[in-house]
Length: 239
Image (tube, rainbow, N blue to C red; front, side, top):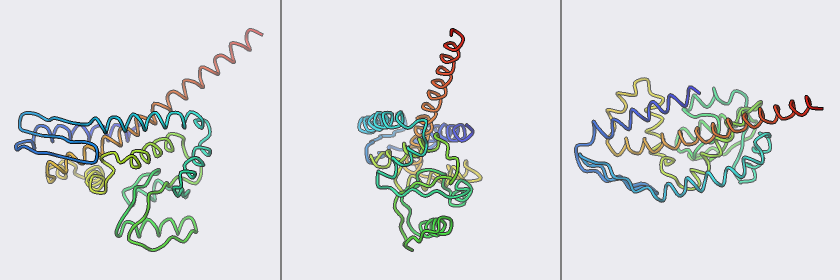
């Protein structure tokens, strides 16, 4: 998928920039579950808690998704049972792009962006949302034909946010979107501090993980369908 390669390419660019071009002084970068010391000669990570949480998320989601892999609507019903608002609107992808968001899981918003998001939802769903400078986490999907891949990726992001993984905080997401959506990412990267770059790298890593997780299930499901079809064909031929 093109989005996967775009994000992966940007991740490599930022990783190289942080480790080669920007590391001149000793830096200590901390977030919710990671501690990283960066010096001119080495970068040392202490990410045990982050890795444990990621594994826990993957294990939990695998058991859930296997139940609903062939039923996107049932997976959406599961999301609703989590107590998170789910909105379905026409052309969700194009509408959300205007806010630098993607179809799926939407992180809590503040300020003008929150107002715009709430107004868009009210306009396209006929549901009146309160006019506030903050909005809770939510899911927004296309009204028709939402791909199972999109739902899985969104659910993975939600659990990453719920488990407080680094990269889902407002600052990291703001820097990430500024660089990823910017017309000149090189210039955007050059204007960032080392801590901003490392925060952005966490957000990028979480996005790649959600894509990889969804792709893995999509491939497994497709292979399972082909195997089942072959078994049925073989059984029919032998009768």
